[in-house]
Image (cartoon, rainbow, N blue to C red):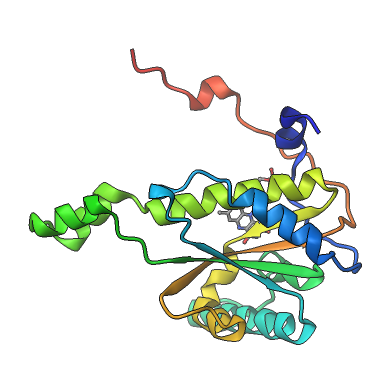
Length: 203
Ligand SMILES: Cc1cc2nc3c(=O)[nH]c(=O)nc-3n(C[C@H](O)[C@H](O)[C@H](O)COP(=O)(O)O)c2cc1C
């Protein structure tokens, strides 16, 4: 498929058919995702491919119960939020984690005596930026193969529980889930702001 068609055609899919996704397809998509630009080429990502229904149900329950706990604390009526748990309807959930990344620049700033906050404000999370680049490629690779995806950060409300259910390795941090499967709905036509509106030429 032509690049422009992939980029413009990919839309979030939130309802999926139950048919399983072959492992070769998953590996092919992830392999493409790993060609993303990433800080110092550290490739600090790890993709946990979750297909076990019991684990996915446990993940869903963890997100739902944490959400309801927070809603009650905030004085709201507890209710399930579809946008936080929709991954339960997909045959595959890809949980994306990153490992701690420390660049030579960060080391320099530490040695120069900058505080953690000062370093953080200058580095602007190259690890998370790298993961984002890989996830976007994953979504496009999936779309090109006829799969639907939904990139999800809302479930991170229960990050610690999810990490434990998935078995995320020591030193890694979970940062997103990607629901993946054959689409069971037509993509809704989300639009974009005109490029001129989001562009500033600094001349
Ligand atoms: C970092 C990030 C987090 C997101 N988290 C969620 C989420 O938790 N639940 C959800 O339903 N969609 C989530 N989305 C999908 C966005 O809602 C969606 O990309 C946006 O509305 C644009 O629509 P499109 O993907 O169809 O172009 C997320 C997207 C990104 C990039």
